[in-house]
Length: 314
Image: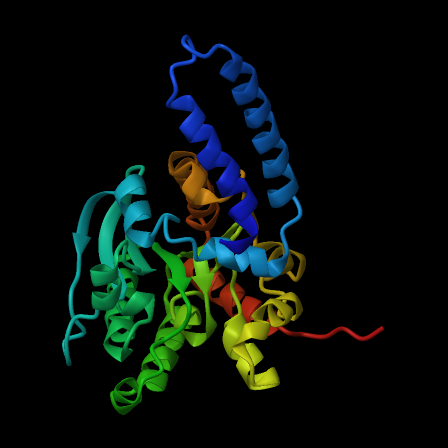
């Protein structure tokens, strides 16, 4: 990422120095120590006062853990479901059953790839309508068998192509929202990366919203907002500062319930620590929601939805 380039240069220099046999050049030991100290100071400077645009960039880091990584690290006995029973299976959306610390749950999540071929196959995490219909299918299945729903958000938005519109993209998103508003089981949403527009909202509304520190959730991506307002996507850094899309903004506005801290520099710096924190947050939240009666759960969720955007005048 652009703002990390000074740090990357120092880290590359440190790596090259560490490849040298210090016993043959003992003067390098002091240089290595000084460089490590400088890198530590730069880490603190770069990552303790991030702008919204810098957080968006971190949320998109190619090495950032994806939905598949969380499923592999957090869950056991995973059974993936395929297809929407109408058109095809959309690999941009994961839907399946799994076990989290002894509790059987239904899992949803946007799927990005780890290389070019995977990203093309998964449409870079932007679902088609059949992906949302697959998600809706799982929602109804979870409701029927009393399984809590855990949903992972990581998409720039739903696929906007004409073929997706031909197959009912808007309707598929709306039906997901309708299903989520009515299911009589706990719904826990975890923002792990990007959370753009209706593509995220379709599986991103529930009883609790947990956000990773450098994830974002917005009505529109910064680039699209800049394109609409300024006719210039290059002004995304400006619009991201206005959208109040960061996890910290969402917590302040009462939209998010918890922000999970990431390792300094982002979740990709220490995935294991991030997985442990997310596991704990989901477990605590399910423990709080599970005793609530289904009718009360649905009523509270409806009230939560109606409260979004409410304005209380002075």
